[in-house]
Length: 231
Image (cartoon, one colour):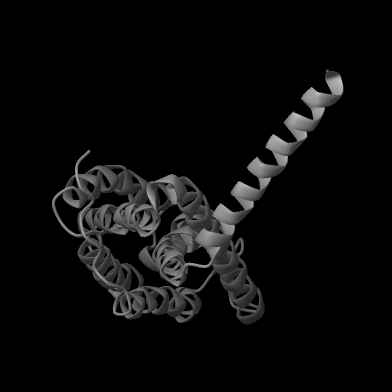
C-alpha cells in the first residue's frame, strides 16, 4: 500500500511540476509582457536612483539646503507615491491602463527635468514639485494591471511576479550604472563629505530623463487592451 501511495504521489508531483513549468514558459514567451516589464523598469528606475540613493545629496548641493531639509524634501516623493497609487488605482478602473502609463511617463519626465535643472525654486515650490513627481510616478500601478491583463487569469500571478522581479532588477542595474559614473567622473569633483558638484549630478542624471523617454517610445509599440468583463 505504501508503494502504491508513493507512486501516486510521485506521479501527481511530476504532473504538478510539469504544469508549473509550462505555465512559466508560457508567460516568459510573451513579447508583450516583456515590453511592459521594460516600461515599468524604465518608469520606476529613475526613482530608485534619485529618491533612494543620490537625490538628497543632489538636493543639498544644488538647492543649498541642510541635510535634514534635503532628506525631508526627497522623502516627499514617497509620500506622493502613496497618494498617487490610490489616485492611479481609481483612474485605472475608469480609463485605459496604457493611456495612464503614457501620462505618467510624460509627467515624470517633465517634473524630473524641473527638479534637476530648474534653479531658484522657492522651498514650497520645490516640495510641491517633489511631491507631484511621486504622484505621477505611481503610474506603475496601471502598468502592473496591464501585466495581469496580458495573460489568462490563471497565469496572472506568475506574470505579476515576473514583472515585479524585472522592475526591481532593472532598478538595481540603474543604481549600479549611475554609481559607477559618479565614481569615475566624480574624481576630484567632490565638494565635501563625498557631496559632488551639482553640475556633475546634472550631467549624469540625463540618464533619468532618457529612461522616461524610453518609456514613451515603448508605449508607442503597445496596444490598448480591452477592459476585463465583470464577473
